[in-house]
Image 1 (cartoon, one colour):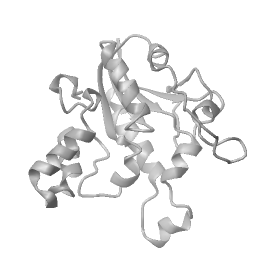
Image 2 (cartoon, rainbow, N blue to C red):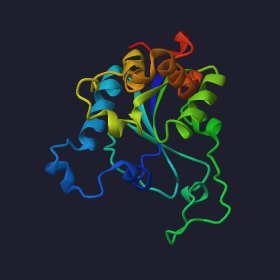
Image 3 (cartoon, rainbow, N blue to C red):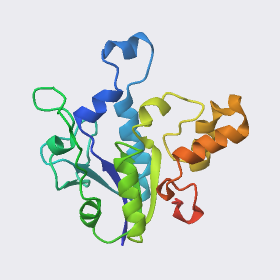
Length: 212
């Protein structure tokens, strides 16, 4: 039995949605570039703690932004990116498009026998959540590292919150409700609980939290 950190779909098409359109803007506004920090997080939070790092990709796409180590694994979805994307190969929006999701159970089964699963990647409110919920239903101790989902590209700049070495769910909760406190604590908590109600996030069931 083993521990796994699974990072979903690190491809250019998803990542570019969260990057500055002009790379020079990072220097102009004194913003740290995200990839070095993301790779450092994966190392210090997971490889250094005995987790096998696994990346899930579409068969027709290459990894982007992540620097895999030789001991890492890559697994593949049962569908192509083109089946999941609303944009065709000419960059035009598909008419009456209905996205097709990868088979989450087949994805998880490629991991083998695991006792603990942490999930990151794209996108926290859909694909990542779906995989986390299926893993929990399969009896796997699972939690989503929300710092290392697409939320990362906003959170990593917040030095008073972001910790390269660990993910703390309670600190994340406080960070997310902070901006809504101006509407009152009750409303802030209600909004947080609405967005993060899935047990895969680890807030509704203490037993699903991974403790390193």
